[in-house]
Length: 443
Image (cartoon, rainbow, N blue to C red; front, side):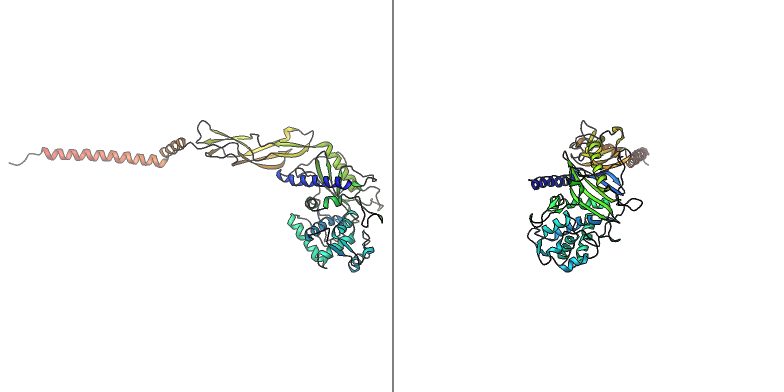
């Protein structure tokens, strides 16, 4: 039953991510009502792809074990059958972690044995097993972990990450391995559409050998019921901790049909005197951000498809000289519940006059939507109806334009002058002939 509920929740979040592509992205600098301790915080509404809160989200940070999200993506895309592909646990591979004080899933007990890729993915994501990450990277890389890391960097570039670089698949500290909160949001959004990822990362206990041994337990305190940081609406995803990276946490939450993704990087582990802090501030700040967002932020439709935003003059249409313009699509975003509507501004850019014919849906101009001085998005403005051209009005206008053009006037004047000259010439010719007729003949 628990797995079924998790699956339904996962599908809901994944569907929200897909649907979010139909609305434009935006960003609002909202003010929160609590202090934060995490160096980089990023809260994204998954329904609208709207950034609701941003604190140093583009600053480079060490990713620690959040690296494993990209490892999961690459493995799942390189292995055709996750459930039936077996990987033999190699002691030489595991030995690469000797002396690193790594978090592991205890795979040293399985040396020489085989586990499925799905089992290893659970070991890697639930208990943050560096051993599982390394075994998977070695397998997919054909015995070459560096080859696997190249695939990780290639995928990051493909997804549009601008501040991410990997040198290992598990997240152990390396100065050349870094990311940003914004990039991790991009990576995680993609991962949520990958097979089993939402379910596995929302698992709190995983039994690798049935129930004969103690289960692997999640490192994510937000989804651990016995934890002081437990948040009932949280779903997955991944933690990470090293002295250099601090506490890191990427999670999602789903409440009343509204989904958020939160990235928290580099929360302090030690106080100014070097003593370990009692609080995990990555979890504290994430939970506080969720509670704040659900209490203070709401979906608001700024502009709807049927809303007539402005009008423009149109030529060559019988009994009508104005055309209404409407948005190409509705635009909704997340804004404070107590927002001041006067701070919402819609600036339009469209031609003063256009010529018929025009079809309903033709792009005529644009509308720039801003809140509190910050640009949220631009929306195309389109014709709200189809208007045919009146050929009579068009012909009359062409004739009028011709008759009032400078060249026509000059030509008319020239013609008049030539006509007058012609009349004068004809008149003189007549007078000359008359004189010739009247001259007396010699007798």
